[in-house]
Amino acid sequence: MSSRKVQLIYRFILFLLLLIGLASNLITSLFNGFQTYAYYTFQSNIICFIIIVFQLSDTISSLRRHQYYGDSEKFVRIQFLACIWITITCLVYNILLGNPLTPLYWTKNLHNPLLHLIVPILFVLDFLLFSARREISKWLPLSAVVFPYLYITFIIIRVRIIDFIYNPIPSYVVKYPYFFLDVSKIGYIGVIKWTGILTVLFLVFSYALKFIYDHTKQY
Image 1 (spheres, rainbow, N blue to C red):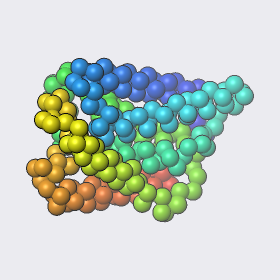
Image 2: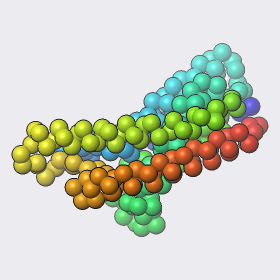
Image 3: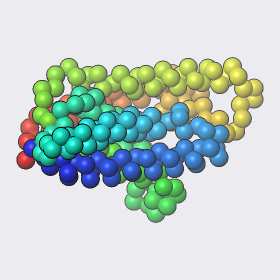
Image 4: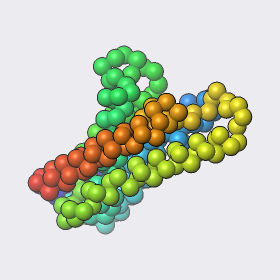
């Protein structure tokens, strides 16, 4: 069992980091045509923010009932999935799009290191440290690809809407947030190939996290 007071402090810090990161991202986006909603990073961090709000609320409720020790039994499965989604955010950005070893990574803006590196690590640790060990079905990791597939579908539909509304398309409008979804440059075959690669990554990390979750104990 973990200390609820430690949970409270940890989750409040994570809540603040998410709030600051998302707010910084939104404010920056206001000066660039408000395109941030189209990014997987923003959407996956929003999901994490919502989960942490509920987890923080649950921790506070437990303390009010004088339950000073215990693990979070609610939202275990959805937080498990969110851990995969935010881990891919971290890996894809830091391997393919950004470089945390450069000064620009840390100084360009406030939300970049928060949403792409710090929050993902802390969110996964929150799950492993404070979530009660409940049985996770061997099929649950397969559903980790649902949100990414919905995101890709959203991008395709959004591009069609942009093409319909704008002629010409304003410079501030981002059609394809990521190069591996850019049909105009790599074609549908290229997008399908990248989707396949990312699908494998999602599934590998899903089952890896399940293994770690199943074989670690809380003290």
